[in-house]
Length: 102
Image (cartoon, rainbow, N blue to C red; front, side):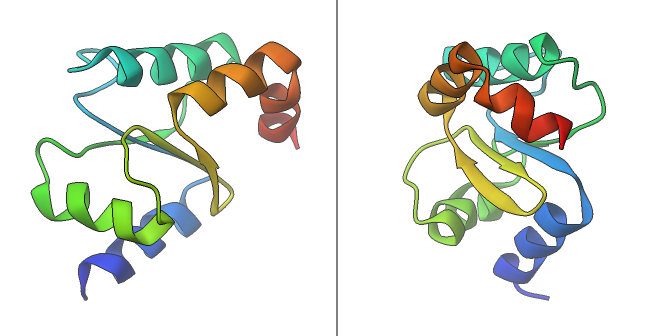
């Protein structure tokens, strides 16, 4: 299985996936920390967090998969949502909560 297939499998087999630097407990950048905190603020506790620092192939592959150059990246039900800034804007407007509730 190539890296794109592995990423596709992760985002389709898990309801919520966050590709981040570090882990939710020990984020390694402020944007990743914000992304994990936003999910917690939405009441999401059961999401797949993929530490791209531990998996260099995924770190590069996810940028190609989403055609998005930065990390973190959030996926909900197989769909790319965006990075930390987009997550923040969606959270502040209430849209992210709706996306996660449906």
